[in-house]
Image (cartoon, rainbow, N blue to C red; front, side, top):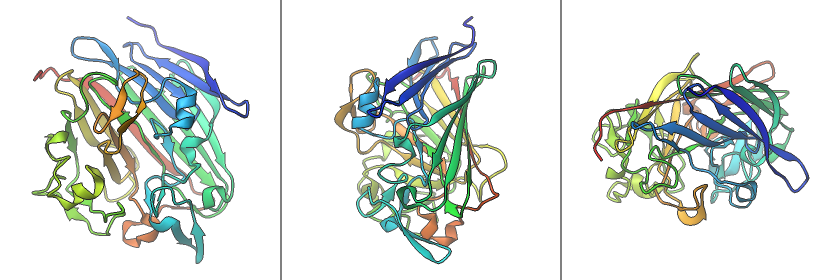
Length: 362
């Protein structure tokens, strides 16, 4: 049986000479996770299939230059505000703020220099606990957001093949915070012959948020019953991902929507989704304390970038499941609030539990 270990290395060096840390975690089951300081990102996750064969199940690059030159949010922490803000504008305490419009007219994942694009500092690690903590201090005015925000991301690998990240953030002035992790998953194995469209997905949600043509929620909370968005029972992702008769699928060129998985932020994580690859038998249970889940079916992969295996990423090769609060919340009061004040602590916990199903349909 493998022995658990934590190894520290350097993934590469930024143009300013700053080293990007690489941390490799291995548990007693042989599961291996590689994390890098750039974006406090998941660079690889290797887990076994039903035959005991290990494969990397998350998309990403093999080297630092690709992360810098062809950013795709692979495995990254996204913020200060994940997802979209309509028009790149919001008002806080009566003052108007503008943030970068890097997704057509909207701001996406914190702007042009969001949390995915900065090198987080490695501030702690524990070999016995298989845990690593990164920290980033976003200065007042960073990407147009008020207040200096101190954020930590603590990853932990359990011997039960569960990977957890816990985000904490504090501020010195009122601001907005909505972090998430943007890992892309293909449980068949990154770079292998199968994409993620045969995966069976379950989302524990009875409603989702419809969007307009710019992918901004309309404000409606729509029931999933009788729609392509009903994943309450396991559903093959590819069955409706190209169904242009559904205006919502046409808007996103597939799935790029937020499901309502809770009434608000919970004290502790709850199961919100289950992903299964019926060919390899690999499964993943997703848990979080967040009320929303953004499911993105990899619609804009266009074979312009190659991943770790050297194969080009194409539409549907991997999917993202991002626990978070709702998109464009600052401009839609009915969605609640993502405001953070001094003295408060923002907290987002995401847990990916990997397992095996013996039901073979290959």
